Image 1 (cartoon, rainbow, N blue to C red):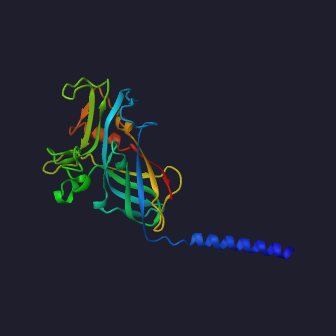
Image 2: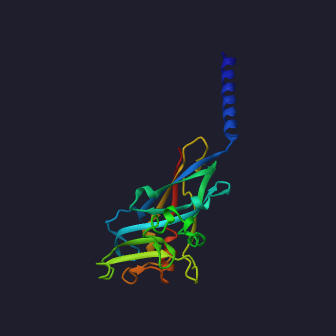
Image 3: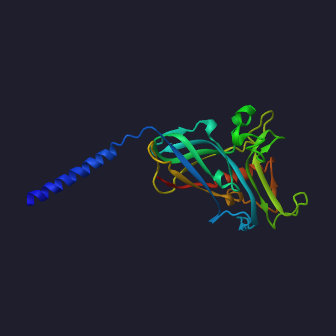
Length: 270
């Protein structure tokens, strides 16, 4: 009986060793997909149009519009290996008013363990000046990018934030106490302009890496996007002083603020 007991223990240890070897020797090849969810927040609260929030400057705000372009995605593995998503598959227009737009999927991603991402807020200069035939889908100025393109300036609005605030001066042209921040400018085509294209790189704050495998469903990155960050750090925006900003010099201040509104919070693996 004693020999049988020790024999059982030996078999159990051997099985564990074999299982461990199989795990360590896992072949990671092929391609899979990755999903991103853009979870819009206002500080610690969910973003809801019509709800009242307070900016770092103490201004009360109710948002009516929150749209932005993200593009030029690069996925980063735990060993530093990078996968550059093909440019023509890497432009997305996110709208708070359209829940479907807040979830994007990137296909044909090399299998691996991904812990970070780099992307552009806005539309890069090369794509902005490319022929109209190469700007389709969400980049089509007349359809997909309607309301997010300055025809007079031949450029995209990278981030559009609108709403109302009692601190905003009464504006008869807008019909009340409203604020508007339409931020674009890629450096200029025929003459130089500000360049408000921003690139951010994020790593997972906690949890496991995103395991992309050819035989598994897509892992799901949960991205937090805090609209109130646009009003602070490094500059607290006063709506009373600057209720509107479009293509003027102040747009650089707005762009510097909103570049840190993204956080790669966690990942859901299938």
